[in-house]
Image (cartoon, rainbow, N blue to C red; front, side, top):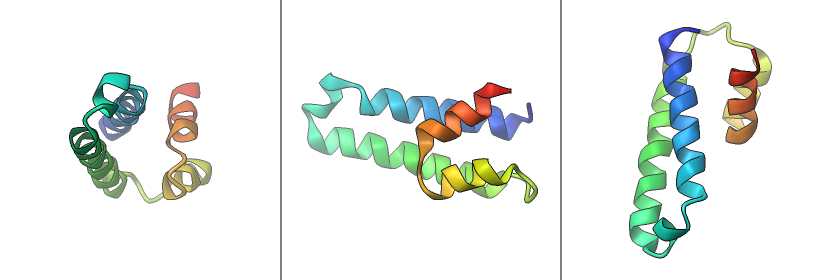
Length: 76
């Protein structure tokens, strides 16, 4: 798997972990900032993806279906 796909999978996992972090959600401002940072990272990584990526992966990323995108990346 190309490095950008590895980085993207890591960022997607991080975002899911932040969403599930009950402790983090107690501080709304901090939680929101963490989500914003990782979401910006995901968007930045999207710009580095090859133009010919799997259309389904592109669809998941464009729709912000990040759980599905991660499943798609790790399925193969």
